[in-house]
Length: 218
Image 1 (cartoon, helix red, strand yellow):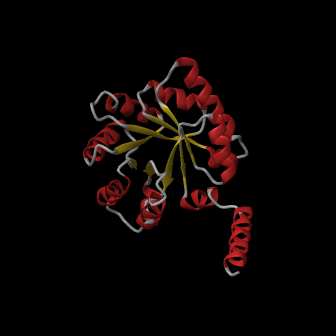
Image 2 (image 1 turned 180 degrees about the vertical axis):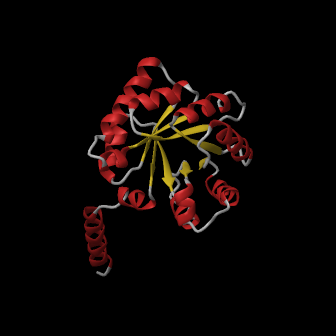
Image 3 (image 1 turned 90 degrees about the horizontal axis):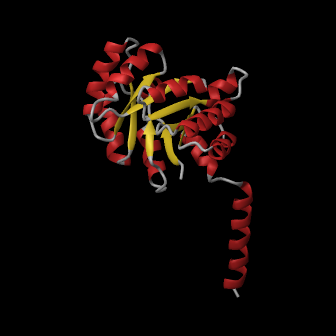
């Protein structure tokens, strides 16, 4: 069964999603922390962990391997639920190879735009490979195809790295990610809300209630 993550650092959104009982984790990045109005990554991440008690990803800001490794050591010490987000670049691969050898080396490889990148991060020891589908679509490419290719490659070689569908912009992305066999889907709160919403459900419910009122009123 695919896991559902929410892509936000806003506590109110995380609490609302967690209340549904179907939330498995949270992904954050520096931009989302900024939108949440906080510069204290550790404090905010620990608040999130307290709410979800599941996987929570926090991203490094260094671009060199040594800096990423140093940041990862700190980030991973915050909680056993925390995963460190490392970008899919050459320096990131170096960092992932080192971090993945640690007992607590939980890695979410981020900013992946090709199946080739996904294969390399899996080889480097990443726990998750985050495919940025929406941004691929923005560039006129096919994000779903990249997700499908990654799934096939991982299955071909028995790679244990989980395929994470990221940069989800719509419920169409959600459906296609599920059909493609994504292990994890992370999405904005607004998309999660749309997953459970249908005007036909609203109309049907209103009619059922109206009919019941007619019967009950007799």
